[in-house]
Every structure is written in C-alpha cells, then in structure tokens.
Amino acid sequence: MAAPYKRSIILINPRFQIKFSILVCFFLLVSSVFYPLTIYDLVTKLVEQANAASPDMAEKMKAYKNGLIVILGLFQLGFTAITFIACLLFSHKIAGPVYKVQKYLSAIRDREANGKLYFRQGDYFKELAEDFNETFDMIQEDYKKDMVYLSEVSSYINNLSMVVPDDKKVVLDEINLKLNEIQERYHTLY
Image 1 (spheres, one colour):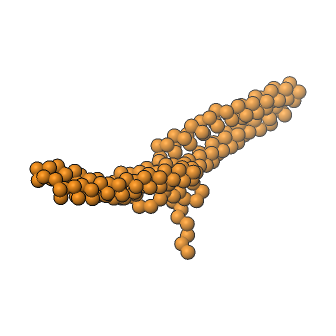
Image 2 (cartoon, one colour; image 1 turned 30 degrees about the horizontal axis):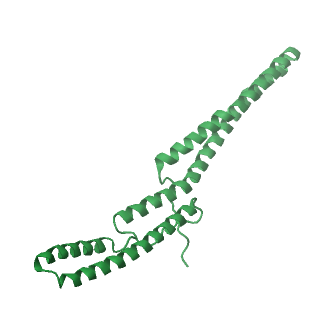
Image 3 (cartoon, helix red, strand yellow; image 1 turned 180 degrees about the vertical axis):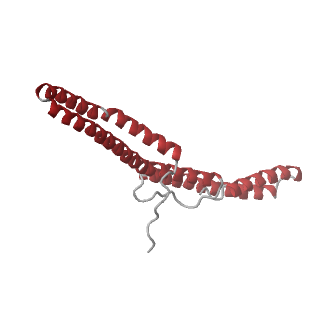
C-alpha cells in the first residue's frame, strides 16, 4: 500500500502565506512587547530603590538588568520566529486546498479534468471539496439528461428531414450539425 501523498513544498502560495505569517507575527510582536518593557521598568525601579539602600547591590542589579533585557529580547525574537514558521505551516493547509481547487477548475476549463476533487488528509476545507463534488455531480446528471434530449431531438430532425422538401433539408442539416457539435463539445464535463 502506497504512503499517503504529502506535499513537501511548504510555500504553495508564497505571497499569501508570507503576508499572513508577517501579519500574525506583527500583531504578536506588538501585543507582547509590553511584557519585556514592563519587566524592564520593574527592574529599573528595583535598581533605583537598591541604589538608595546599597550602591554595591545596585551595580549588581544593573548588570542583571542589562542581561535580562538581552535575554527577554532574544526570547521575543525566538518566539516570533517560531510563530512565523508555525504560521507558514498553518497557512500551508489553507493554501494547499485553494491551489488544488484552482488546478481542478483550470483542468475543467481545458476539458482535461478527470474525476472528483479531493484534498490531502490534514488539509482544511474538506467540506469545500465535498460541495464541489456534489455540485458537479448534479450538473453532470442534468447534463446527461440534456444530452439524451438533444440526441432525441437530433433523431427527430433526421426523421423529419426525410419528409421535408430539399430546400428545407439544408436548414435541418445545419441544426443537426450544431446539435452534434454541442454534444461533442460537452461530451464529458469532468
């Protein structure tokens, strides 16, 4: 049994995925930058209080404060980078189905589509594929009924052309030709 298909390209729609990830990281960065600033402010006030009581302790706390700011800044950058990567992976599960729908519709437009639309396991919007398939099944059923009717009309016109005068046969032959073209063009919808 073959392994399930896994798409290895993470950036399916780079413009959307990167923009989405940058926006999420921007809002995360803006909303979470207050925590390091609050901690910095708190430590600064502690250093000021310690300076009044013990200048030696204040010097140690200043060194601690500077190290703390660097560590908090690195944590902030690291967390933002992890969030950016997580957003790329998350948006991959959105961009994948959209890409698949685009390819599917393009194949229908080029009359090369075959079968139903399916998404990979783990992709979002599986209900979209189900709706597409149900809709195209309904269109296909209506189409088959129309093709049967067009076939009957074509048969009637052929029978009618046997009893009509020759000058009218040209018109009936033209109608029949157009009906056959329609049937050929729409032989299969997908």
